[in-house]
Amino acid sequence: MRKTLASGLPQLGLSLEEQTQQMLCAFGEAVVEQNKVMNLTAITEPTAVAKLHLLDSLSLLTLEDLSDKRMIDVGCGAGFPGVPVKIACPSVQLTLLDSLGKRMQWLESVLPGLGVDAECITARAEEAVAERRETYDIATSRAVARLNILLELTAPYVKVGGKVLAMKGTAAKQELDEAKNAIAKLGLVVEHMAEFPVDGTAHTVIVLKKVAPTPKQYPRRYAKIKANPL
Image (cartoon, rainbow, N blue to C red; front, top):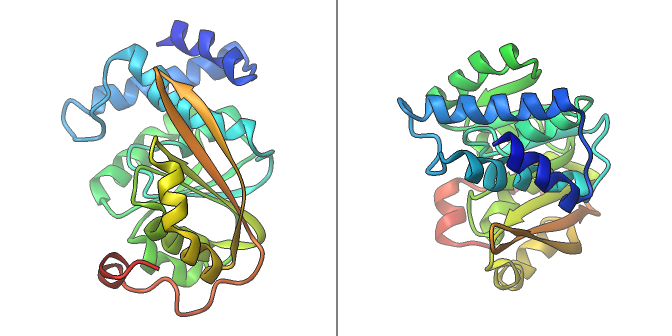
């Protein structure tokens, strides 16, 4: 894992201290170990963890200066991309949000021992936003939903002038076409798309800027979002 991480960082144009790389691998190893008793990830082979979890998450640091920014990882799962970003950029003020309590309890228990300070919230994205509306500089998410659904769940968290960093796979362009209506209604504009080759496949980050407040009726209840996406 460590060797793969070290060789992949220059390809992203990143340079991290040895201690930081050790912390990243320690988190990756903790995920693999916990996965033996809890369903966290289908990716457990060390080289794959380095490529598909750690380096993939760190690609966000090549797109935005996240120093001192408030960032929320919506549907964080096992902590990707939020935790690796926090390890590599400690001044990020990180909130991890997921609806699965056991997963969040594990993150709350393991992160302090790794020196990672993050707020862990167990809640559905469309419900937790009530107290956090438009308070974050950055909202990010990976492997949660198609873009037109994802943006309704993430955009309300972001302040005007902030950004949504949506991590996507090979269908990114198709999802972006589907989401044109959602982008307009939610107060967003597309800034750019960045592709990162990861293990032979293209991983894409869609960067959207918040240019106007998201109307108060969004997000709707998840059943409505899913049944009738914007």
